[in-house]
Length: 103
Image (cartoon, rainbow, N blue to C red; front, side, top):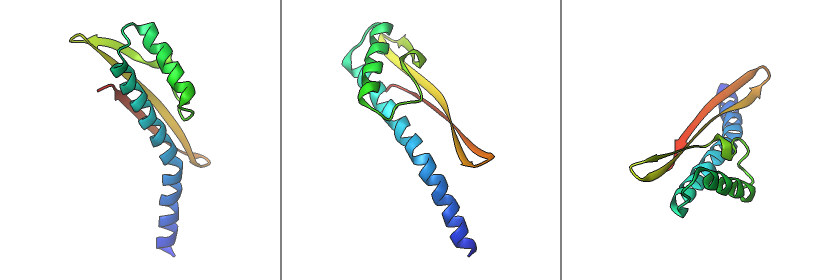
């Protein structure tokens, strides 16, 4: 019985965390695509991200204005970060801090 409860709890956590991981990897792919597409100005990159966000319905945690866009060694680098709060069982929450940057 103990093992069944433990496996059920782990399954519940996995079911609630997997959509947030999918969103993170979708954002990472979108950011890498923006860098490869050759956008050069900050407004262009933010607008392109918003267009990509409209296509990728799973991106809900950040927007174009949340991107940190810099130029390092004549290369555009896009960084992003956000926190995702997941309710496990009231009043227990899991907070995951996602951070990433273009490659």
